Image (cartoon, rainbow, N blue to C red; front, side, top):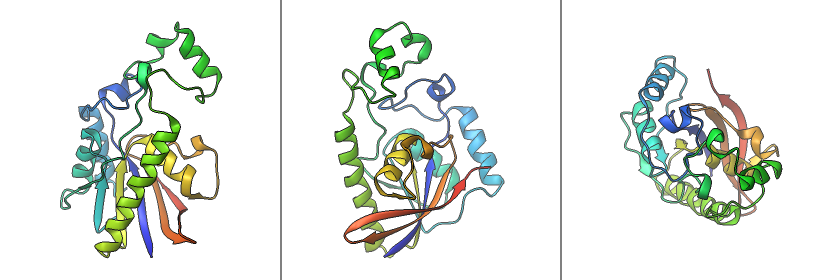
Length: 200
């Protein structure tokens, strides 16, 4: 089974504009975010698909509805953004004087954040969520699909399954942008073969 998959990051929220760590905070798109997605749609940025999958969070569902208004989004529980713990919905200005934040910065984001979801837990639910999505594609005979999710989810997908192998942050994309890939199963494992970037 091969599926043409488009991984798209949701549009901007108020927290994104204020450079906050927006994880479990379920905020909607801001007007600037809506307008940017609409401009991308008008510019023909997004390809046509047979199905669209989203995270359960408002910002993803609203983005999908603007891009693909004729399709009903299939919500995949487990594809929510990570929980940033004590950093949740705070930005650099609010955290820069906190020793634990500086330690986290110095560790290049590898240190455990108090109250945050562990990388192992996040990765486990990404695997489950991706499996659910691929199972739905197989059962519904879907050949082209869009997955409107969070930046961290896209990076995790590509870190786990992406070809070519690249650094985690290589796959970081801006709001409303993403990547095109071909997904297949090889030797019982998923492989996401990168094809091109989705960006203006």
